[in-house]
Image (cartoon, rainbow, N blue to C red; front, top):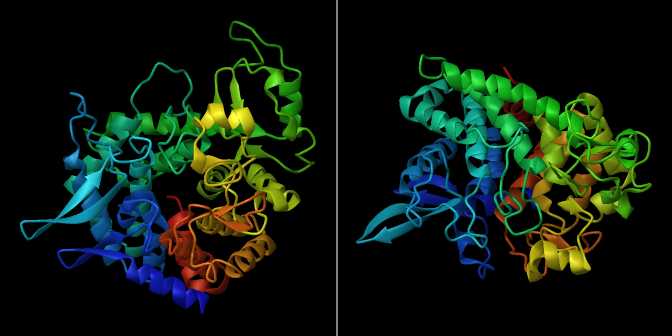
Amino acid sequence: MALTAAYNLLNESIIHFRDRPVGTVAARDRSPAAVNYEECFVRDFVPSALVFLMDGEAEIVRNFLDAVRELRKQQKVMAGHQRAAGLMPASFKVTSEDGKERLTADFGEMAIGRVAPVDSAMWWMFILRAYARITGDDELAKGSEFQECIKQILELYLKESFETAPTMLVPDGAFMIDRRMGVYGHPLEIQALMFCTLMIAQELLLPTSGTQDLLAMVAKRLQSLRSYVRIYYWLDRDRLNEIHRYKSEEFGFDIENILNVYPESIPEFIDGWLDEGSGYLAGNLGPGRVDFRYFSLGNLLAILFGLATDDQARNIMHLYESRWDELVGEMPVKICFPAVTGQGWQLMTGSDPKNVAWSYHNGGNWPTLLWPFVAAALRTCRHDQARKALILAESRIYDDSWPEYYDGKKGSLIGRRANFQQTWTATAYIIAKHLLEEPSKCAKFKKMMFEWE
């Protein structure tokens, strides 16, 4: 019953443009918390695209890819500033003017944080590669317009900065956590997506005289990013002991504390939180700073994309096992842990009432994270965890009308301002269900996600 209802929601969410399916709305809630939930968000469409491809319905995915590529031309000049052509919109909708339909894009101008989406182009690349792998339609990505689009994305994302680290610097609100949450800098989720984007570029960007230098940059950045994240973002007992005994204010090249992290910055919750065999990749990293919060999507994507080593992947999933009540609770999966409270919440979020402790992005539980969790569990041979998470989700999300997120330390409460009939909640459930119960569709998922050339 739940699976049928999830498919009904997905099918009802499809957006048509000139009689062609081009995407899915964020939510089918009759009274959404924000009007833009009636739009198609690029990041929200990812699990929808995976379901369509697993089911052999590739037309809508191809139309989506082409529509988003074309929408790049709608960028507006803001305060005299013209942004790069490689930037993708956060969302789009179908509008009507003089009886004619047109697609209208939002590049962050209408978003709550007024920040351009860094992750949209990366997710677009991910969907393009998944489409090519499942359909065998290599000609789409090899076409001149798509090749130019890939090139422009890389030229934007590989721009030289004033930093020495290979990670990518982004502002708060530029990815799934789209409100101020203290993630300015080098958030793990973006580094995992950047790593995936670079791998995809090596597959899809044709080697020509005009792309040789760019591909050389891709290869160099890919190697340095992988090593940097695996070494400096990783936290386990051994690593914490190193940081605990760090000397600070060191200068020169031959130093241990490369980022000048102060031992006093280790938060109280971390003492005793990691047992032997547990570990995770830090949420954010920069000079003088480690964000010790655990962010689920970044860690799960690091497992799926191979950014984490095999040992690190196993340790991350062991952390879920040992801290299940805190990281999963009653609804998979908590977006980050722990929540920031009190004065920390005031300073970090600007007293954001939607991001109060254990709600929304500040420690809320998001059912859409079910699909990467189940996939990561299966990849690390944690079938018991995958099944347990699916059973938990299955027991509530259908009866609760597919809410956007849950509140509370264990995710026991429906989100105070959550939308219902949320499309990526339903599609995450469909993917998880297929991965555990449909071998043929699971094989297609693995082909899209794991088989890198």
